Length: 427
Image (tube, rainbow, N blue to C red):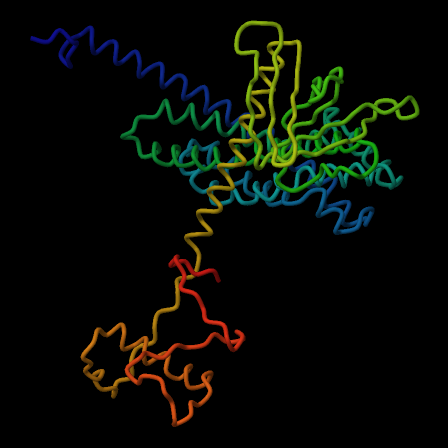
């Protein structure tokens, strides 16, 4: 006998109905907020297209290539969102986002160009006096509500994150039997991919800024920090313990995804700068914690490289633990990545060339009395023997039954090759 509330149970039916009412109220609230924010978003996009893109092209204040670099695909985005606004205002949320998702490549183009657009815009504001005055004049209009052009250009990326939350709430409050459920859930997945793309671009941009900062800190151009695929992990002071009985010296270390850079502070003329001393690749590095496993004060790390060995010490227990974790993680990721690439190259290696097929009209091999292997070896050695062995005189005292010995090419006349005790052949 079951005590769970059934369909005919008044208390169970009321609980289910209350849950459905809460979903309906939340869905209505989310849909109303989506419409209001979409209206405001389209108005702001229209301001950018009207007072900046179109007028700048007409007045030729900026070159067309510069306008394209700064504003990218924002005009196409405005057109796509105007169509979406019509659908959501009429209550067709699923249909509107279903037609909106195929146009998301316009957003991909925009967010991929966003950081370059900021750089070009900053350069034009610095050197183009006419554009600087024009920008200030347009931003003073009451329609902009004290918004700057830089803020308006960030709106498409911010809107994608808002769509992600709106679609999640709408999907959670829509019944799976509703036809809009599949449309909204598919749109949520597509928008989430663009949102992840924006986050990846932001992390790559921040990493690029960190690499630039470290490159500026290092005096001279001896150590190249900027490299494709390199990621900055951390930096800090550690004491390098020498192998001989000398006092440990503090050094600044910069850890990247593929190398560890050791530097020392420069003198007063170059305050705040560092001189790069060594760059240790992490490809074949081994990280060990010599001591510091307990809750003692500080610890000692041992880094073994093919041509060097480092002993790094810190008096801060938490700091040495963080360094050990960061180094071990970087080395592990780098070695696993290279192992995967090596295995893939082995799989892509071309197969050995097969032996040629015998001709169609070739007859069966001649019958022999001895083993086939000896016959083939004897046949293959006969041409070489004839070519290298000088003709023997007819009056020979050698026993004809004795097998002939083939001379080695380039060997002295009186030398006889000794039999080898190993079957290995050195090529």
